[in-house]
Length: 251
Length: 253
Image (cartoon, rainbow over all chains, first blue to last red):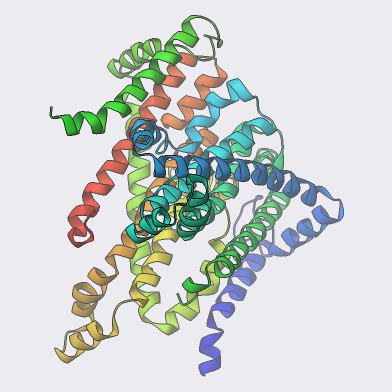
């Protein structure tokens, strides 16, 4: 009985998938856009065999990665600068607080005018979204460093550069990692959003095209592959977090 | 204004003025294409014209209603399921695999399937916003409920509080900081997904207008609406912080 309770969730998932299959095969849904689950699995396999899905996912992930790295690097540098200089912080914070809350989907159409619909646009949009969480966390991490650390650095007459490298950066690292993790979670979603609005390439564009073309099986196959990518990315984030911050492992 | 306030706000004000001034000059002098980036004074003018026209309130109301309705439903469902899954092992076991299957899907990718299946319309868009905003609240509520101090629960048991009273008076307040953290993430997601759904549905709302104006090359109007959205974003943020301070006075600064 206890075993049954433990796997009840998997039973529920299996039941829902069966229900999906049966509803499509037996025509309960009265919709031509409701392919059976098995047809989706076949479309998933066909898409991999033909090389289409690996190509699409590869396009999406490579643009995402470039934008992510650029945005994070800018976020860390800017966060360090603003964290160390109160004047710079007061100078930039109203501008930052103006741009940060703009919903990302809203800035894609204006950006298309300048960057076109291809790689440059997507890289910029991902970098823009990845920038803010890293910036805010780095800034917080730098400002939270203890007075003791500050004075120790002064006692040892560390040069500003050595202070930055040996004191400021390590003590801000947990906060920076928290920002990197948040941004990685956002990056995939934002890449998909940019691909859907601007089009031209990637798995996000493919899914929208499949909807317009009323090809439900390849469309669902694309969504499922994307879900798998999202899941793996999530696992990766958790792994990185555990590895980089072992003292947070308990939670 | 005292000198401390001047020191605090002057640099930021200066930066904003410099940015606006630089944009105005770049655009007017033709360094950047004026057709693509009109000067801020022109955008502001257009914004006033748009706000005075009758075509202002309809899309605004469409977007805001959709967002708030979806967000509210998602928060209620997320907290309810989160408490149930956090308190009961059996319910957790039943729903966890399903939740873990749907959660990692980038929610924008669900818009085309849902449009195809339910048809393009407000109901479908509402489902999308709910789906996007639901999971952060759910996950944070489960965590928050699980982290509630056992002593608190045992004390409540000693006082023979009923299940309902225990949930409302002990569990919910203790989990509230975590719940609010999830609700904050969801707020941003709800707004973005509302805009995106409107863009892809191509019928109404601010999202639709912005994309439509870009395609019709009505650039000034497009920027005016982007500014409206930026203001909405800032206002929602401020509103949330105000609510958070009220709900969690002990959290401080």
